[in-house]
Amino acid sequence: MEAPGRRFGKELRNSGVGKSPSDREISLHIGKTLPYHADMRLQEKGHQYQRGDDGVMSVSRLVRRMKNILEIEIGDVWVEGEVSNLRKQGSGHFYFSVKDDKAQLACAAFNAERRCAGYEALQDGARVRVLGEVTVYEARGQSQLIVKRVQPAGIGELQARFEELKKKLHGEGLFAEELKKPLPRFPRVIGLITSASGAALQDMVSVLTRRAPWVKAVLFPVAVQGSGAASGIARAIRMMDDPENHELPRCDVVVVGRGGGSLEDLWNFNEEEVARAIADCSIPIVSAVGHEIDFTIADFVADVRAPTPSAAAELIVPDRHELLSKLQRLGDGLRRPVHSKIRSAQELIRFARRGVLTHDSQRVLREPILRADDVAATMKRLMVERLSARQQRISDRRSTWRSRHPRLVLDRRVEGLRQFRLRYAQQASHCLQGASQRMERLRQMVRTLGPESAFERGFSITMSKSGVIVTDPDQVENGDQLVTRVAGGTIESEVLK
Image (cartoon, rainbow, N blue to C red):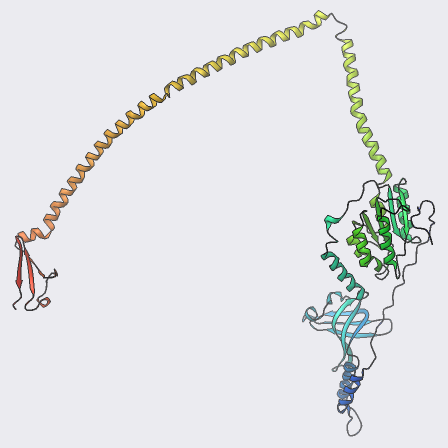
């Protein structure tokens, strides 16, 4: 057995690609065992299968007997085959056949969308497993399977285990994005956990050699298929991550993977032991299992998933040609501004030598001195103008302050209050006079329209002792006391009649 940790660059030999597993034959499986209790039921119902007096059995009786035998002897059964002649009725019923290379069986899924789990897998040409009850359609005398459940072929117990473990680990947070470790940008040592004789190793070696020949790769050969392979993969991950293990160099990133295959072939990467080893590893791990369409539990737990082993190698190392091109561009970008600065300095030196140094210094400085004098005069003029403007502003502010002195403001307020009092007194007097005049007019009107004027003309008002005005003789009785009001006062009287 090869020692773990050897470099593929020196001691690994090329190996051929393993043969892909052959396609499984599509077959029709129907159970044939007759349980004891079913046999007893047949004996108890034997009177249903009696022949007529002449020994001849009717068609309906024979078909019914066939139906009862199938339903009692076989009952519910899983059947695997290929779907053909699928018909979807408007009522929701599905009619189709499942077949293999030797036989076919008519099937019916009544109200499939509500009563048949997994009906979405029913497509012409699809390999499926269906669970149903074997019976006979009496009107045609044709055997058929009443389907209750459908699964894609090959997705059975393993797929159920896959979904269960995926749900469990997801609930524990092993798939959380915040746990994913970033890949190093320029790894120096790369660990490869895969088969020493598989095509996946050769693909990764080829890509790493082409893209990053300076990288040192360390192979930990493991079995990637078969019994016990999951334990070997998990042990290899733990050994790669063990800081006390001095037999292996410390890796910057680890690739765990293999080539493509069936669900059973890739199953070791769906084991909980491998998933937890990947999750516990402190080194970034890239999962490269199978082809692009294959997904395993290791893909969800790993820090990065690569669709293929070759893609994993391209993902973890940069391309040397791209790096060289980028370095060349950066170097050109640094050289251009430096050369430009040097050329500008050289031009300035040549101009100085050609212009200033070849002329008389007094003549050269004459124009700058004149410009300096003009600038000084302009600055002096601007300073005087600014000072004058500031002084004018201060004078305006001072005048404004005088007009707003508190004493002047108070005098104006007192004068305003005095004027307000005069206006208020005049207005109040005017209002009182108007109210008095209105009151006198109302008094005259009341006197004219009120009962007093009527009393003065000889009218009177008769009331009961309680003050109720008497307008009808029926309101009083003999002996009642009455009060009559006239202009001069009141008269008390007693009713006699």
